[in-house]
Image 1 (cartoon, rainbow, N blue to C red):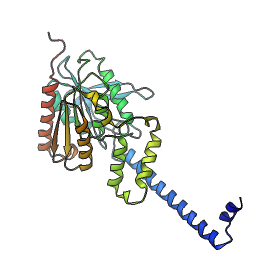
Image 2 (image 1 turned 180 degrees about the vertical axis):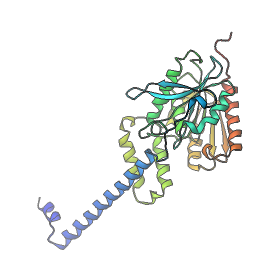
Image 3 (image 1 turned 90 degrees about the vertical axis):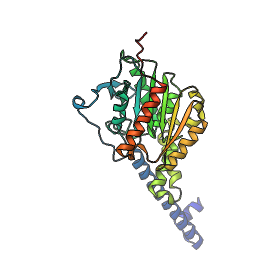
Amino acid sequence: MAVLSELRYPTTRPAKVVSALLAIILFGFVSVATVAGFLLYQILKPTHSTASSSDLNVMMGHPIPFSFSITGQPEREGWFFPGLRGAPTIVVCHGYLSQRVDVLTLVSALQDHQFNVFVFDFLGHGSTPGITTLGYHETAELEAAVQSLSTRNDVDPKRFGLWGVNLGGFVALEVAASDPRVGALVVDNAWDDPRDMVQIEVKRSGLAVIPYVNRFSDWGFRLMNYRFRSQQPISLHLAKTQGIPKLFIQSDDRPQLADETWKIFSRAPEPKQLVRDRLSYSEMTDDDRHAYENQIVNFFLQNLPPVSRTNP
């Protein structure tokens, strides 16, 4: 007690020095924690996510609103683009800092080849409020969407394809590893673990030069998603995707995500392919995007052909 009293009200020179050092350490701790907390909030609640409101009556492809439920969450609405009746459905999963309206050209390309196609906004993006978990909660969203779509009488309930970029890619891998209805999968610039993406964004912000900001950001993210603490990186349970055709895509302008994608690809079982693009999907020119989307369409045509289940 005497020691604590001396530190609170120092009377000797050594005590004053120790007290000052402790005050500096405490101030530094609080400052770094504050910076990390603010940065983490910026990462998980991106400012450029805006509500994706569109008039479906004038949209190409004649989309139909389709709602699905997630346990403990309000009902979620997506857009169903009808293709050949009884054909497989491709769920197109947008990426981080993106939303469903940003992937509509790919949707159109797939629908033009008779696939049924479905898009929706992940948590914290577009029309869906909240804070993103970078894949933890979003996996349940995609699982719920696939389950609800399988109850429609105009699709093949046992044949689904998934395309996802970064956030959507991680989620698509998670669902493909657990749902036998997934028959083909395209993963573009995904991460192995949501914690990896937090570190990538911390480095990209330039604040990683501050000591311990990256560590505090990781601790904060883990605390916020404590209920997912036992979830392993996707690369550790890729064996469950054995037999599912998989196309992995890297881009030169996102080297850290390209490295993450390579790590996932190298551990994925066959069948699998890997291609490398110069630009990521969101940065492509119209010509580049057209070529990219043709590649995606051809992959699904080869591995999940849009044949109606009602055909003999």
